[in-house]
Amino acid sequence: MDMNVVGMHIHELRNQCRFIEANVGVLNQSLEKQAPVGIFFALQGIMTSANQLARILWTPRKGGKERATKLREMLGLTEKHPLNNESILAIWDYSDEANDRWIAQSKDEYILYDFIGDIANSQHKDVEMKNIFRAFDINSKIYTFRGVGYNMDALLKAIGDVSNRVNQIHVRMFPDQWKQADENGVVPEAGNDAPPANDTKEAAEEGAAKE
Image (cartoon, rainbow, N blue to C red; front, side, top):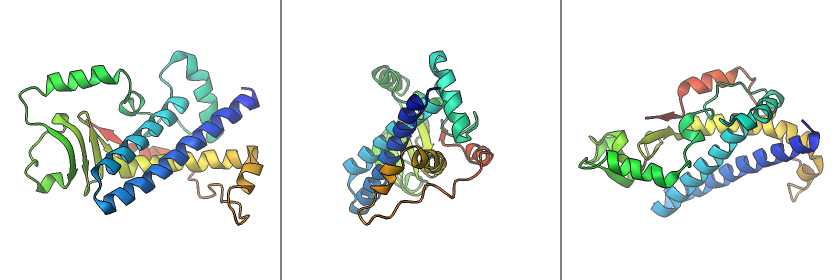
């Protein structure tokens, strides 16, 4: 793959990781302020960028397989990874139709919508995950959307692994950007603590999404 093309993909991967970092900040602030709109806004932003990372690196499309494979090789990532997950890869595919399917399957069921709190110790403790449209459990850190639960701690750990690897390449390809990154002139660390590639197997086994 042409290095200019590689550079574009690496830069976009880094952007998506930075967007996630920003949304984690919004999420934490919104949790402190007990601001539901901010909480769900940040979670949706995290999932959108996670979807973008997944599709760039583990695309299900035949036409993108070569690009994804070459980028994973450069980053030392394996096929098995928490982001290589059908629920994450397809989270926004035909979203209106997915809403229709969820509404149809939950008809006449006890449903939960836009809940934030400790589900296990609430009046909704018996609701089935498949009947939750959108919720965030503040204890388990499970974000549920359209009946699928995402372990945010495991997901962010997996994203951190990708981010560290991307930064190691990005700082070599775009050193000037890193020199300008800090107003005090301090060049940020470029992910020196990135775990080796085989550590992603352990992260994958934790599972980022479940139905």
